Amino acid sequence: MSQSGVDLETSLGYLLKEASSALRAAMEEVLRPLGMSVTHYSCLELLAQRPGLSNSELARGAFVTRQTMNVLLQALEREGYVTRPAEAPVGKVLPARLTPRGRRSLEKATAAVRSVEVRMLAGMTEAEQSAAFRILKSMIHSLRDGEDGA
Amino acid sequence: MSQSGVDLETSLGYLLKEASSALRAAMEEVLRPLGMSVTHYSCLELLAQRPGLSNSELARGAFVTRQTMNVLLQALEREGYVTRPAEAPVGKVLPARLTPRGRRSLEKATAAVRSVEVRMLAGMTEAEQSAAFRILKSMIHSLRDGEDGA
DNA sequence: CAATCTATGTCAGAATACTGACATGAGTCA
DNA sequence: TGACTCATGTCAGTATTCTGACATAGATTG
Image (tube, rainbow over all chains, first blue to last red; front, side):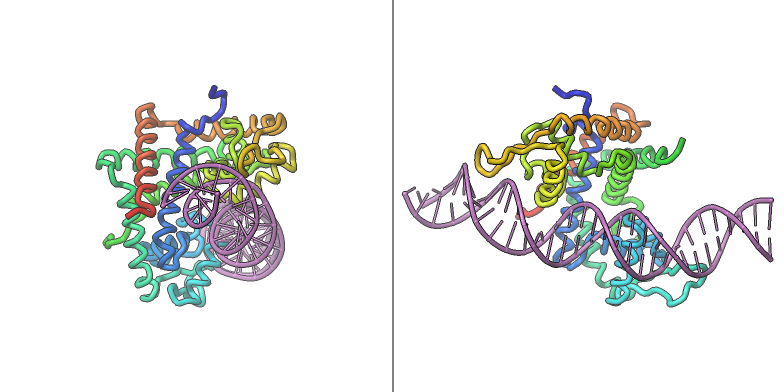
C-alpha cells in the first residue's frame, strides 16, 4: 500500500542519507582513537591539499558554516596544528597553513580514513566507481541548480 | 603532486558527503516554510509508512540516537501530531502513530520533499538510477560489514 | 529456576553546529 | 569621489544532537 509518499525503500535520497551516515560513522570510529573529529580531520586534509585556504573557504569545503570553522581553527591554532598571519596580506582574508605538527597529526588520520574509503569501495568494479562518481556529480549539480532560481 | 592523501577531487567519500549535504540543504529549504526540520519530517514519514514504530526504531530510521528521537517524539506528542499509549502493550516498547493532524501536516511536506527528489533525479536515466541504487547499497553494506568485526 | 545479556525509554549534562549581528575591506557603478 | 553591494572574520546566544547513566522488560543460557 505505498500511497503517494516518497517510499523510503526505493528512495535514492534516503539511500544517499543512509550511505553518508554509514560513512560518517565509520570515519568517526577510526578517528576517535586519534582524538580527532570528522570536521577536525576535514579541515586538516583541506589545508594539506590546498595550503593557504581561508576560514570561509575551509568552511565551504567541510560543509559547515564559517562561524563553526572559525571556532575550530582558533582551537587548532592554539594547539599548534595551524598557523595564520596576525594581519591579512590582502583584504580580511587570513590564509591558514599546517604546521609540521599539524602535518604529523594528519598522517595517521589520513591513513585511517583511506582504509575506510578502501573498505567502502570493496566489491565495486572500476566501472562502477566511475559510474558512482558521475552519478553523484549529477545529483549535486541538479540540486544546486534550482536552489533559489526562477 | 597528489601525495599519499585521499585526494578530495577524486574521493568518492568526499563526493558522497557533498551530495548528502546538498540534499539536506535542499530539503531544509523546502521544509522551512512549513516549519519542519529534516529529522521532524523523517519521523513523520517513517510513521506514515510503518505505523506503530517504536522510538528506537524511528531513531535508527532517521539516523539519530534514540535520545534525540525521544525529545522530538515528546514534542510531536505534546503538539498533537503523534500519539503513544500510556503503557506498553508488551515490554517497554511504545508503538507510535500519526494523528489525523500529523497526517495532514505530513502531506504538504511529502510533496515538497518529493519535488526535491525529482529535481535530484533530473538528468539521470532509468539505468543510471538503478546503478546509483545498487552502488549505494553496496557502499552501505561494505561499510557496515567490518565496523567492529575481526 | 536463576543469572546474564540485550534492548528499550528516559533524564541530565556536554559537545557541536547554527543563526543573528557587527565592523571592515574590496569591487562595482554612477 | 561616494554610495552601494558583497564577502570576510569574529563575537554572542540559541538550537540541535550526542554521550553518559539508570531502571526495567524480554530473551538467552547454564
